[in-house]
Image (tube, rainbow, N blue to C red; front, side):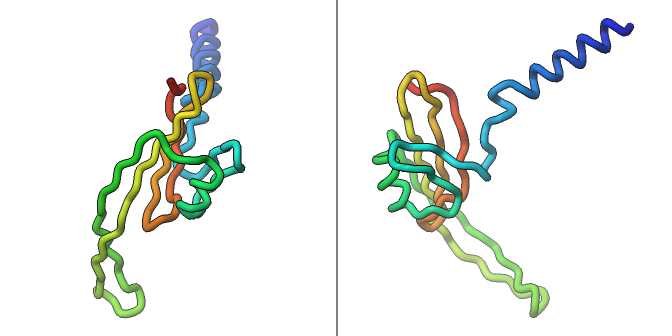
Length: 114
């Protein structure tokens, strides 16, 4: 029984230390040759630091905002969402950036590049 508990503890430690556990879920940074990109940076800053992304897609998303001061009043607006993927080569991780209205809102680490 004690061996089983030790095995489970060891496997849990391996899973916690795996690269998946450290994959960025939207609050981190991305290092490029020209500097570090962070959530909140503009599209222009990203391009200046990292160059052109390998792929880009664009969509729009409806956002519902409630007015907390006046009660049930809400507004609906459309925002532009860009998804950029940066491929830094075979020995480096790829990164996906989500930009909302021209600003980085999320950075996610992907698999190794190609």
